[in-house]
Length: 270
Image: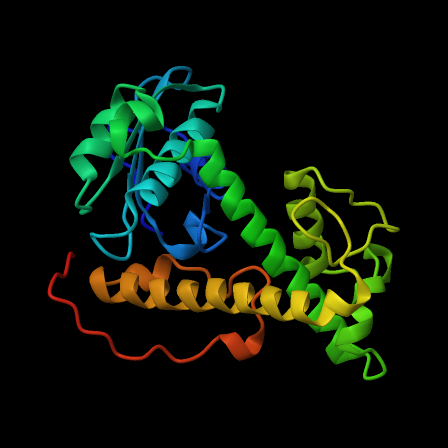
């Protein structure tokens, strides 16, 4: 992994691991995967006294032109989860090699917030942005569960999945992921809850179910495709970064794990 210990570091390797575990809860808002699994955490450095340590984290992204609001959201969430560790006294999170690195890093250092960092360019609030991507993640999670069920039960048709309930889904990480996403949106997660619902938790009329499932499938394919593409870009941009990427993202199917096409970019950062 890229996490490093220096001579000035707290004499407890577990400190770095604690930081990494905290960062594993930070998701790329568009790809719906932990930034640690994607290889976005470039380095972790812990220095100072054990009870008031200084944690410095560098975050890298697949391109220098990744959406600034996504970049800020990940960097800001990283600072928040590390700050919550009881032994941490100060947190420095820096975004590397991005066209808005200076602006974002200055805003993070000053705790200026999203609107304070971007000013008039911040059209939506951070919570509005977060909610939009939570809904997309939930839509994709619904589709994964229902497609898994359709493949396991040849008698089940797309027209009938509108009556499938959480209790009908097999136990496993796909179902667990759906339950987490429903909980994040405040949607019911008991066994009797219908799986295929709109953003407000309302089931679809029977005649609208096939189209709702197809729209959900389009969302899931878009998320999985973008994640696959971004992983390849990161590995091309930063030599050796593939070692920091998890082998398989949560919810991905074996068929989604293709050989990466060769990509040529103009900038390479060791």
